[in-house]
Structure formats: structure tokens, C-alpha cells
Image 1 (cartoon, helix red, strand yellow):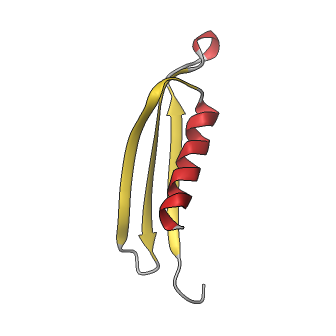
Image 2 (cartoon, one colour):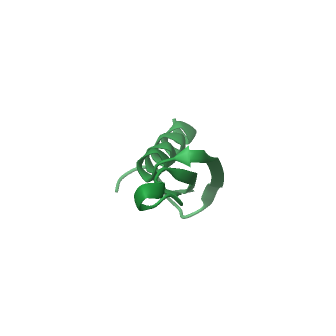
Length: 68
């Protein structure tokens, strides 16, 4: 890749499964720059009534907002 860039890894998950979905949910992400230096690492509880997809989307959205 030419020029500076960042690398983002994110995830989100819910404890809700099957009939218990949604459940307690959280997200996490970390961002490194083009030299491999860690910029930020975040883990966050999102609430007790979240689906896995909501948590995944929140992880993506918040990580992108951080670099914007």
C-alpha cells in the first residue's frame, strides 16, 4: 500500500442465543497505523438487550468514527 493507512480490527457479540436472543452485548476494536504502532484499543459494554448483528455494526461504526 502506498502512503499512510490504518488497520482496524473489530468485533461485537451478544450472549443471547437461540430463543434468548437478544442478550447482553459488547464490542471491541483496535487500530494500528501503517508502521504497526497501536493507536487505540477499545472494549465496551453496549447493554442487556442487543443482538449479535447490532454489536458487530456498532464495533464497525465506532472504529470508523474514531479514524474519521
